[in-house]
Amino acid sequence: MSQTPCIFCKIVAGEIPARKVFEDDDVLVFHDIHPQASMHLLMIPKRHVENLYDADETHSAVLGKMMTIAGKIAHEQGSPDGFRLVANNGRVGRQEVYHLHFHLLGGTEPLGSGMNRH
Ligand code: AMP
Ligand code: ZN
Image (cartoon, rainbow, N blue to C red):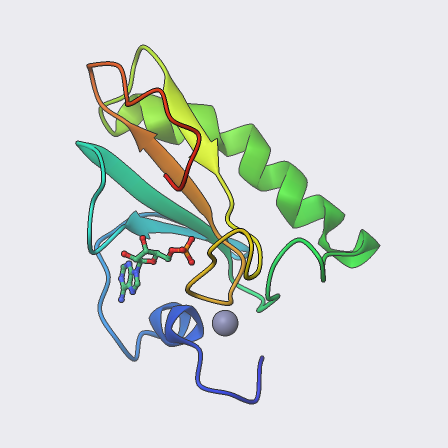
């Protein structure tokens, strides 16, 4: 756990609410509070890590799990025909919340073609 208050750690701890769609011992998936697409979910490891710069071999299992379940969750949450998976890292990546997360963006119509942001 980070020393600084982390909003996503607070969601994991149940201290602030979130619209959860999937949870197990290691991973939490919930709706983004400011959706940028008709499906916009955030997938996080429950154990705090700032971003992919700080990921090491101790994160391999949870990162693998997240990649493995992303498609099933996207399908179940209204994206049966494709979705986008985005991780913003650090200043240049315009990361706003420094707890590693993947954006799952989709819906039934094609997303914007730009790779900027999500
Ligand atoms: P970024 O760090 O730039 O990849 O984006 C952080 C994302 O977290 C943004 O899309 C926010 O809308 C989202 N966000 C921030 N606070 C919350 C919250 N309390 N619940 C759900 N999503 C949030
Ligand atoms: Zn955190």
